Amino acid sequence: MSDLSLPAVPPPAPADHRARDRILATLFAIAIAWPAIAMLWSGTRTLTRFENRPLAPWPAPALAREFPPAFDRAFSDRFGGRDVYVRFYHGTLLSLFGVSSLDTVMPGRDGWYYWLGEDGRSLAQHYRGAFPFRQRWIDSTVEELGRRKEWLAARGIAYVVMVVPEKFTIYPEHLPAWVVRSPLPTPHDRVNAAMRKDGRVTFIDLREQLRAAKARERVYYQTDSHWNLNGAIVGYEALMREVQRALPEKLPSVAPVKRPEYTPGVDFYSGDLLQMLAMPSRVREDDVAPLGKVFADVANRCARRIDKGEFPGFEYYACDRPGLPRAVVLRDSMAIALVPLLSENFSRVVYVSTRKFDRAMLDVIEREKPDIVIEELVERTLHAPGAYPMERRP
Image: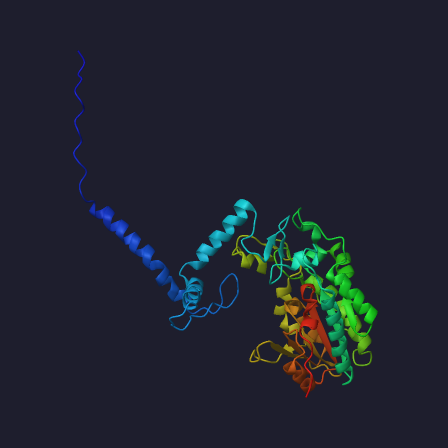
C-alpha cells in the first residue's frame, strides 16, 4: 500500500532579509536622489543639449497662475538625467516606428533627414503647397528689396541678394514616398519671377546650378539642415560672378577655392538634425567635402577674424591684400560655409546675423562704408524682407 501522507511543510520564510532589504533601500534612495544630484552637473548650462535652445528661466516666486507652468518648464529643462531620457525617447520612436519625435525634423529615405523649419511648416508651404504663401508677401518683399537697393545706391554701394534653396528643393528624391510636390509654382518660383519682372535688384537663384552640381557630387549633408562645402562652392562662384559685375574695377579677380581632400574611412560627419534627435553618435555620414579642414587651414588664408566675439551677431574679418573692396553681409546659418571663401575677397567684411535693415543695421553700413552689401537668405525666409521693412531715418 502506497504512502498517502503529505510532504512536510517547509519552515516559514524569515520575516526579514537584512542584506536584500538594505540593497533595495539603497537602490531606491539612489533612484530618488539621482535626479537632484544630477542637476548639480546640469545647473550651469545655458542651452539644452540636443534642442540647442536656451533653458527656460526660473520664474520669480509668486502666487499666480503663471508660476506653476513656468516652474515646470524650468525644472524640466534641468531635470537630472534629462539627456538620457530624451535620447531614449527619440531613439525608440525612430528605430521602432521610423518616425521623428520632433515637428521640425523628418526622416527621409536612404539615410536622409530633412529640416522642416522653425515652425515645422517649411516643407508643407514651400514644396507641397499645403499652406498659402500670400501674394502680398511677395509684393512686399519685392518692394522692400528694391527700397534697400535704392538706399544703398544713393550712397554708392552695390547690392546683391542670393537665396539658398532648402534641401528638399534640391534632393526631393529622398523624401518619404507620401510627400508629393504641388503642381503649382512654389513660393521661390513666384518670388524669383516677381524679382525678374521688377528688375531693380540682382537676385541670384541657385536651384539650377545646384541640381547640375549634384549630378557630379553631393552638395547637401544627409544628416544636416545645411548644404555642404560642395554646395557652398556653387553658391560662392555664382555670387562672386555678380559681385565682380557690380565691382568690375575694384575686384578684377576672385579668390580660388582650395578644396580639402576627402579621406574615405576617416572623414565622417553627424549633422545638426541628428543632434536634435539626440543621436549624434549613433548615425553618421561620409564627409565628402570636409568643411572642418577649411576652417582649420588658417595659415593658408589671408582673411583673419579680428573681433573676439564681443559683438553678438557680428563677425569681422580682414585681409591685408592691397586694393580689395569692403563688404557687409547679411546672413543666416547657410552662410557659415561661405565665410572662409568670401572673406578672401575683401579687405574688410562684416557678417551680420539679421534679416532687418533696422537702425542698428543702417548704422553699421554707414560706419563701415562698404563697396557692396550682400544679403544671403534661405528659401523658407523669402518673406522676411517684406516682414521687416527698412527703418526710415529721421
